Length: 316
Ligand code: FUB
Image (tube, rainbow, N blue to C red; front, side, top):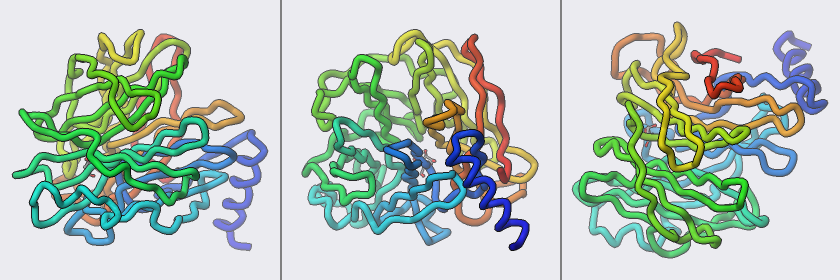
């Protein structure tokens, strides 16, 4: 057995036993990963593209599943652009998908996704539903949210609070504006918009989670193809603010630049928290960064005072 095979076996065995679980990076290809735990598996949903010139033009989505954060299995396509009936209604010539967000409720899975172009027609967000985390997902037949008036409808994320209420977060890029909606119990319609402040240094990629009554709003800051891309966060006593800004948590490191568009998830047995994000493989310090973005996973530590230890991209 080679050293790397032995290492894989050891990490996998330790992780399944619930004692230790370190990822190996890059975890899987793509960008904007939303990683969640469903049943006894980790599931990763990224933007993916095989064309380095069109970094966020996905024409379908796939899911990656793993039991140990080391070996990831790619699914068949879970949603294809040609199965989304309303996409062409804006009259634009070309369309694409990116930045999926996943949620589960009562055994149904909801995949929220961004639809381009962002201009001259407004960006849109759709949602598709499945009975399984690896699909197939069926689009609901109409957009859930459309951009406009300086708001870009991109980077959807749904957070379910302890009382079961679901909140939808989206927005960013040129508008750099965050919008939040309380969802109806069916997870495919909005109940009402909740006016929130856009936190400092917000660019895009909002993510909400809660630990012991502290609500963490984290988000990307900077240019998505620039080394200054990073993840910042703010905390609140509710899922809709008011926010207390804490600064950057994930920034470029010596090996990999421009990390961002992340998600947080927890080891189901040990409670260890992880951050999933994408980075650029290049070590150059100037944009444009080379190659395809890659998804990475690292341990992260939250403190009782609401602060988070800083992270830089690492290979494990
Ligand atoms: O992947 C395309 C865009 O890049 C996303 O919308 C942003 O969050 C950034 O990651």
